[in-house]
Amino acid sequence: MFIIEDYPLQNPYYHTSNDTLDTLNLTFHYEVTRSLVAAIAHIAGLEEDGDGIPDNEDNCPYDYNPDQEDTYPPQTNDCGDVCECETDFDTDGDVDGTDAYNFKVDFGRSDCATSPPCLRDHECDADVDGSDAYKFKVDFGRADCPVCTFSCSY
Image 1: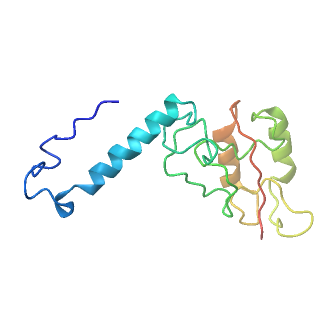
Image 2: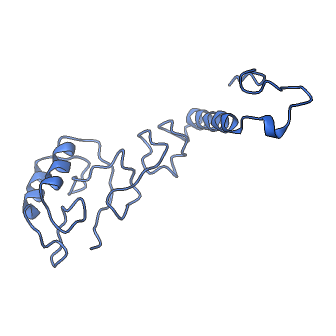
Image 3: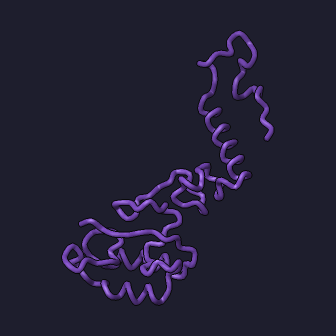
């Protein structure tokens, strides 16, 4: 790695009497350091997707997601939104005809908070409707699904 430390646009006070902590662009230095750590981790094989998050802490280790967003399901599940296949109902790594069959079992139900609960209510809004079908359509055909748990707590 090669970094030019006296790049004048980042610190015009470099090696002058005004070169103090309050003249440093700390955001720039933070980003440079973060990029270096990510590059070193990637080269060392500790960080597969280049987002700066070590694989053992990454909620989506093979897909770039530096924000680690996990908003689905609404209660979260430690799987990153970027890589999650919400409609891999049989958790076999793909969304195919078997998952379509399983989706049809709950489609049209509006009593998901009762027993038995709906297993295909992607929004956890107590029904399986068109918005859930849309999510299924988006995922259909994917064959790169990580194993993620899913449940709604109504």
